[in-house]
Amino acid sequence: MKNKDLHNIKSTGFKAPDDYFSSFDEKVFSKLDSESTLNTIKKTGFKVPEEYFESLQAETLLKHAERKETKVIPLFSKRNLIYISGVAAAILLLFNLSVFDKNPSFDNLETNVVENYLMEEYFSTNDDIAALFTEDEIEQHVSIDHDFSESNIEEYLLNNADIESLLLD
Figure 1 (cartoon, rainbow, N blue to C red):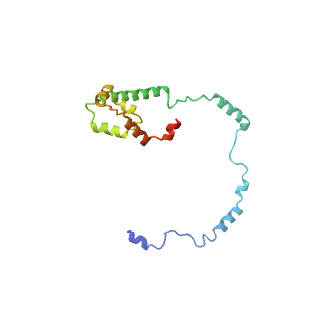
Figure 2 (figure 1 turned 30 degrees about the horizontal axis):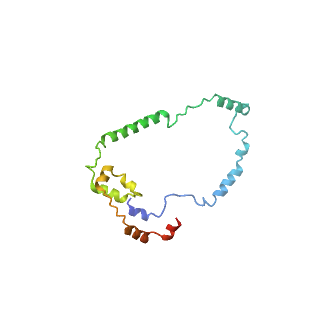
Figure 3 (figure 1 turned 120 degrees about the horizontal axis):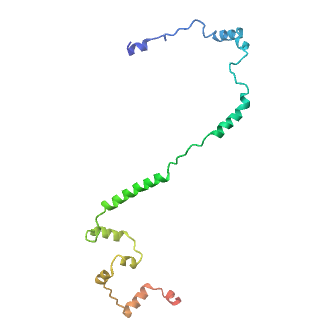
């Protein structure tokens, strides 16, 4: 058969006798009423040994008392933790010894890296900046010229200081 033939089939192929479904309920109930075989059964078919329920509780308690405790093996035992920490330490040592064997120095440090570091870092005091240099470098490159003339001090105080706060202090 082809797929085209399946669309042309008009009957299902199943047949039931005439008036089967209309009289089905009546036939079943009449048969149940006429046959009283269920009423004639005296025994259920299940048998329990004598004094079974009286001795059941005692037997259950005996079996429970005889039960041995099962051995519980913890997932993270001390032995496993030692193995795992040993492996982690070995991996850490491997990376520390082999990958980073180049010693950083100022000779192989790029100028851009230092400039970016100085620009991005927040320095709160001059002490933070001075910590980046040695005393010899500071003495060589930094020369401080102070011009403490009376006119400069007077001009600074007039422009930057609040006279009331100076008088109160």
